[in-house]
Length: 324
Image (cartoon, rainbow, N blue to C red):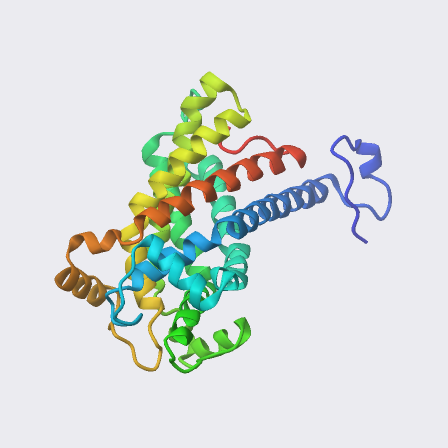
């Protein structure tokens, strides 16, 4: 029989027949807390994803331009939005949202929980309670890469679905119908097919967290001394995190989008290195920052919605402020 007692449980209560011992109860309580932390991260991430997903879709399609996978017509941000609305309607702005939310059930839950654990229990703080920048960089990049590797199949399906509407508008044959069918398409290649693009996607995730988690942590340590652990503090830190995340991750994001959006039966690139080489040689170095404006337009609001929601959810569930 499983029983969990309140934090103030006395030793006498712990001795009640059929109840857990104090040690077992502490273990159960810690496990419950980890589950709450995980679900808090997922909830905030899904909210941010729904709000900012159209910008992510536009960014992905801009990044595919020039790769030979998206037709010969080239658009800017405004032109891409206009073309999408004309051919696919408002619904087209949310192609792949289901897979993207599925990804965050793995990715955001894992990265946020891992970072806090590494920060507090593995690397540890300095004697004065601060957390050095170099430790934050290592922790952020490690958590981003590990979490993304686990979520790679979901990310691959999301990218495929983001491009499918454009393929249909160009008169190309339909490759799948719905999220489950898209998973089946990738699964035809076995595990390598499901994890196609894992290397560039993990590189991107590492760079995103270098900008996102690392910047948020560093900025909060400085800002909280002036503003306190308040909504204003969370706002300032999340905006800084959004810009840094977009800038550092854009090159890896371009490579990831191009590798993952390939037709599995007729790939354009042999791998991430081949994609990088072809992209730079044919389009120049600046091609690695294609889609930066929509990426920033997405990362800024995404980080804002995520961290504000995340911090408030932690407060509502009795947790301490993140990176406090």
